[in-house]
Image (cartoon, rainbow, N blue to C red; front, side, top):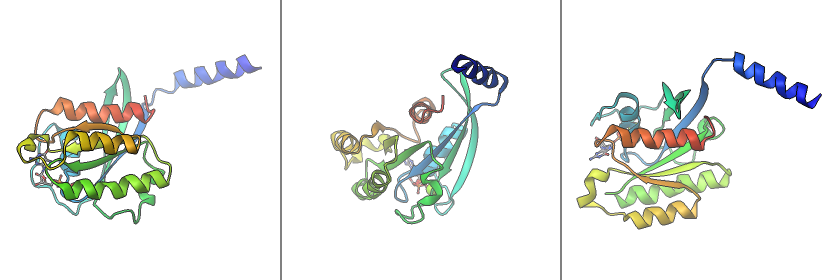
Length: 181
Ligand code: GDP
Ligand code: MG
């Protein structure tokens, strides 16, 4: 009976050709670069001025590890921990963003990490954005790594205005960590 059931499951999965789904949410204070990262991932382009009040969900058909997956990205507007129900159970993985040239954004992102920890949410990717602004760095890579390890996050430094592939790599890693492929 056990084997019969497994077999049934497998054939059902094989018949179902619809791609896997993955929901990613970007969190962090205003100005950290959530929209710029989202747009870069979706279009390969850096859009420098993006409506700071816009919150939306975008969808992209991706290939991650040779597997098709529909990735939905919720680009949030900073509302702090209030109203977090909209993404808490929706998201497969959480991307918490700060900018390395802004200490306030680093402090501000910790509220999101605390809120996610309170709800036992994972996986979390902590992203130090604006790596191109290294000259004006206020948050060391080490501080980023330390915060990430305190909250059990994967840590990356990225830039929405440098190469597309390193931004894509971060989003694809979130898809993997989210168990979507
Ligand atoms: P959001 O409020 O978190 O969505 O932040 P935005 O994506 O709107 O970005 C805020 C500002 O930072 C905008 O002026 C962007 O052009 C700029 N920005 C975003 N990402 C980067 C980056 O990686 N490098 C640099 N130099 N500027 C960035
Ligand atoms: Mg935005």
